[in-house]
Length: 393
Image (cartoon, rainbow, N blue to C red):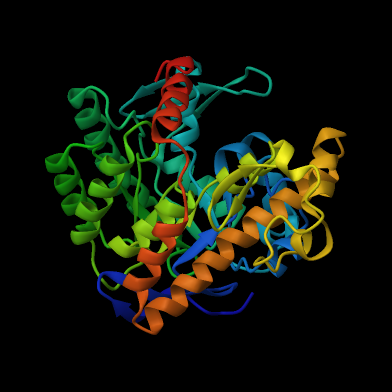
């Protein structure tokens, strides 16, 4: 680690799409960027050398999970998260607000914070805005997130407003705790805009949160049940209210078409478990859309899954072999699929950076969306609503 402080430089624009650079004590990262998710200090099934070779410059870990296991003190005593997990580049940690949302009946929320039961052993714990920041100080990430309350974005407007106002109070408490700690500059703190899919609430939230001088600003509470059109409308509305000299982070979004559309709206940073999660289930990205390697048409494809892809899987194995690995239950199958999907996403981000710098992003976006077939919207919505109902959210 060097003495560099956190900073953001906007290098070029093309319409509302932005090309920039983030500087942290652990190195630089080019935007727009995608952060592979290392929830528990690992990107499932991959080494960090592999993640780095795929083109990742920044990864995301989760303070909630690390707090429960192995514990903040253990990570701190090991020299911080970078040394503990062997990743030398920038790290962002989420505070745990989304995890509390996803736990449903296992948590209770009030103005002071969230009381929850561990998904590991059922023990009871309490997060407050102050403790969430202190935990992330101990973990030692380069970018840390405010503690917020996430709710079903298209739910009861009164509940959405209540969660937004609570998020605002917590944001100020997070900022004050961080400012008193002496970590400002070494660890950047991002505020989070909430407000569901209600335009007026989103405007209010953006105005309030940007009134606090955070190092960056995130758009939270999306990709939790709303339609794609609603997600894009909210993203565009919020980006219009965010300062141009700070990075903008759309949390939890990772479908290829959403990345392209959100970059067009002015977003700089993304994370999502989607690329590796669907990979472990045999779903792989291609230039024309997502495919299932279990499909019979791949059984005799003695050629790469995607002959335009430069990943290790496509460079060394056939689609027929990948299908065989999944059918045989071999762990190499999910590993190769994860390598392929992450490379697809990270190469997409690189291509968008080049298109913005060369002022041809509109043409790039049009060509990508004309070619790439998204997952069926109705099926996606049904799956998300089942997930929400199971958690009582």
